[in-house]
Amino acid sequence: MDINARIYVAGHRGLVGSALVRRLEAEGANNLILRTHQELELTNQNEVEQFFHAEKPEYVFLAAAQVGGIHANSTYPARFIHDNLAIQTNVIHNAWKQGTKKLLFLGSSCIYPRDCPQPIKEEYLMTGPLEPTNESYAIAKIAGLKMCQAYRKQYGFETICAMPTNLYGPGDNFDPENSHVVPGLIRRFHEAKLENAPEVVIWGSGEPLRELLHVDDLADALLLLMRHYDDEAIVNVGTGREVSISRLASLIAETTDYQGNMHFDTSRPDGTQRKLLDTPWLSARNWTAKIDLPFGLAETYRSFCNDFRLPAGR
Ligand code: GFB
Image (tube, rainbow, N blue to C red; front, side, top):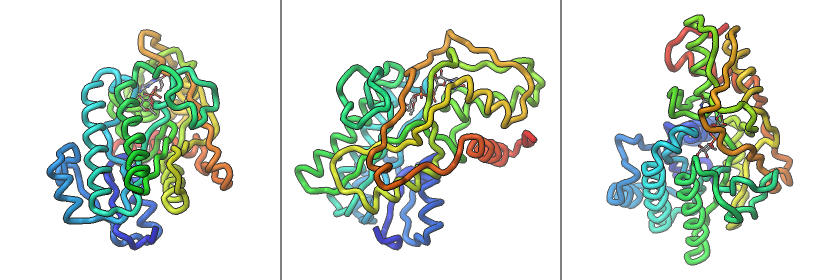
């Protein structure tokens, strides 16, 4: 991929898309094609068709998706399956039709069976039942990766399917209910500190393990894949390191300088117990994530305070 090629980042205002734009611009990209949600409704077939016909991007990063944490996934399953199927179907089909050279599709570690052996190998896909709290999202993402593989097989369209682990970083959605665990807890601890609240509620038992990847590390891996990966097989992207939700909560308490207690609300779901990814392709290239969790959390907390113009923790 020539850095000055016509590169379209779908979803450039989101967590992943904004990290991709930061990274591409840092490398000197000067031909990025970007559209906000207001400018282009990706669930609308006609709008997407016209956009690709007019712009003819050479490379596409498909980072646009309807995403959310465990609560949003289980509360809005219709929105998650509809919007994701529509977005990815429109973008993949029109990219192929208008001669895009390469498209990178983003999936998620939740595509794998709920109870599969750890670390999770790519070949475990579709070998067992999914985690029920995010089944709609996972089914949409499985459909997306199968569509990419089908277009490669039938039309020779160069598609890459990257499956990242749980992500976090600046520019995340910090909604108290609908966000993922890191932004959700950053917000809750921050507010508890400002209000001098005696305790913070953590959803679930605190026992599940999660592998957390900083989105700038993900962007680094995605560029490597776009430049050097050429196979139909899906590719995992992770850090190889796990943290329990209770340990993560303690780290976020330290980051936000919250001195009170934690209460685990077991009426809220735990979701999958573990989902650690095996990453053979990246490991073979000596790729590792560079941003450690305490540093990444501190940076994410700073971005939360800046974005919302809040007084900082320390
Ligand atoms: O990040 P998260 O929402 O998604 O939740 P998943 C991770 C874990 O954190 C669960 C616990 O065990 C939650 O019970 N948790 C504790 C919290 N406190 C909170 C909180 O305040 N907010 C949230 N959100 N969780 C996602 C899928 O599953 O994984 C997505 O929902 C996506 O579709 C992503 O695939 C990779 O890790 O459980």
